[in-house]
Length: 411
Image: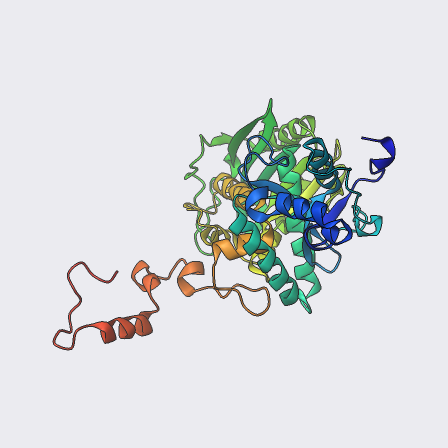
C-alpha cells in the first residue's frame, strides 16, 4: 500500500456515509463490490475481513455528539482495511480512494465512542432504525438526561477496556445519628492476566453494636450474604478502610462506584481516607492514577430516560437482579457493583433500553414502566396482568356457558 494512501489522522466515519455515499463516487463495478462487502448479512459473517476472533458478528462503534445524538460508526482503520482487502483479493483493479476527509470524525468531534457488536444482519438493520428514532425523540430533552446518556456510553467504553479497578463501597449508620457509623462494605473487580477477579468484604463496628436500626430503615448488619462479616474496633475499622484504598491505588485507576454517593463520600472524608485525584467528571481516557466517582443512579436514569433517581432496590429490580437483606453495607456494595456491571457490559443505552423494556418507550426517551416492574410490594398475582382490566379481558374470552377459568389457570 503506498504511503500516501495511508490516512494520517485516525478517526471514525458514519455508517450511513460509508454505506450510502462512498459508493456514489466510485465506478459502477467498484461500487457494486463495495456494496456487497458491506451488506448487512455479509458483514456479520465469521469469514468477513472485519471479523474479530472471539466475537460473534461484527464490532462497530457507537458515537455520541454534544447534543446527545448517537451515530453508528466505522473506524477509519476498518474503512482503510476494506479497500486494502478488496484490492488484495483482486476484486478491484485499483485501490479505491478513501472517503472525503471532511466525512471523517475525530474524537474531538465526538463526546463518547464505545464498541458495539451486532450478531446478525437483521440486528444491525433494526439498530439503525432504532438509532434514528431515538435521535428524533432526544430533541428537547433536559440537559441532565443528556449528561447521563454521555456518562452511560463513556462507562461502557471504559468497562470494555478491562482496565483499572472498579470498587463499590457503602456505609451504614445509626438512623438517629448519621455520624455514628455501624458498618462498611465493599465489592471490587479488576483484571489479572486477562481474567476478572472479584472480591467482597464487610466490617461491623464493635462499639456501635448497641445502636440498632429498625424504626426508619431495617437493621440487617448480621445478614451479610457474600462472605464472613468482621466485627472490629472503631480504630481498626478506620485502619482497614485506609488499607483498602491503598490497595486499590496499587491496582491502577479507581472507578469508585456508589448508588447515591452524597453520604458515603462525606463519611470517607471524615475518616481521612486518601482521595487524591478524585473527580466527578469522567476522563477522556483511563489514566494511570486517580479516582472517578461513578453513580449507578445516573446510569439507571440514562437507561430509563429520566432525570430523577431510583433507589438501589428499584434499580436492581428493573435490571432483574434479585436482592435480599439490603441495608447491610456489604450486600449493598455487592448489588451496586452488580448493577453497574449489568449496564456497563450491555448494549448502547438506546438499544439496551429497547431490549429490556420492549414496546414501553414513550414519545420521548422515557420508559413507561408497569407497576409490577418497579414496585416490590406489587404482588406476584397482580403482576401477571393489570388487576381488573386483565381479568375482564380474560373473562370476555371464556365460553358463554362457563364463568370458571379452564383447568390449569390463566396462561
